[in-house]
Length: 207
Image (cartoon, rainbow, N blue to C red; front, top):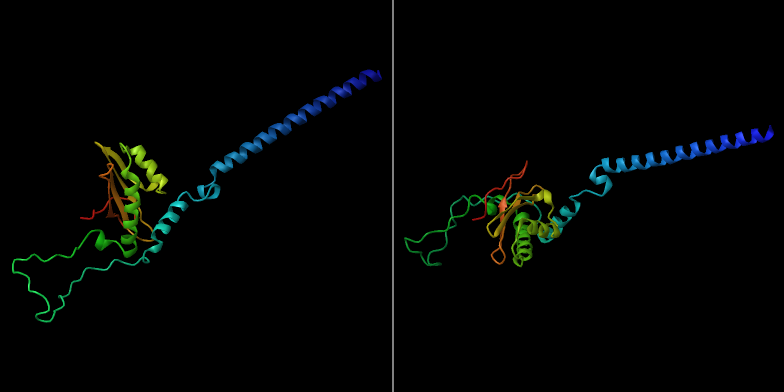
């Protein structure tokens, strides 16, 4: 009788141990899944830092030697300063006087953006000059390597042997954008003007 009771007790203890182990295993799996789900549901800045933080840092680094942001200076509208007689030669009557621009990047971009645009244009053009058959995939990869994120690359498309693109470089209230055409040694990158706010649309090109 005691032997039968002992065997029954051992079976009960074994069943209890198995049940407890299974419960602990399921609980651990559930906790792991919950932690994974919570990581996926966190905003990007909470999990791995803001995705555009490196992009903003790159813009600041390139523009660190440029003057601070300031509204663009309007073109002169007053009468030209009169020079003393005989100080300069009188131009011929049919000479064409240069006209100051009234629109475009030189007028609509602030000093910081005008300065930074030259630096962006140079580094991008140099990176694209040696690309053989510059497809959109190759151009995007190079722009990414330079620090330009996909969210700021627009209208990337191929036309014949040339791949064209726009870059939205608006920062600190500026309106800078770049228009590029990757075509090997004929690559051209030029400044343009984007809207001050709202979605990116290409503005006027530099003439």
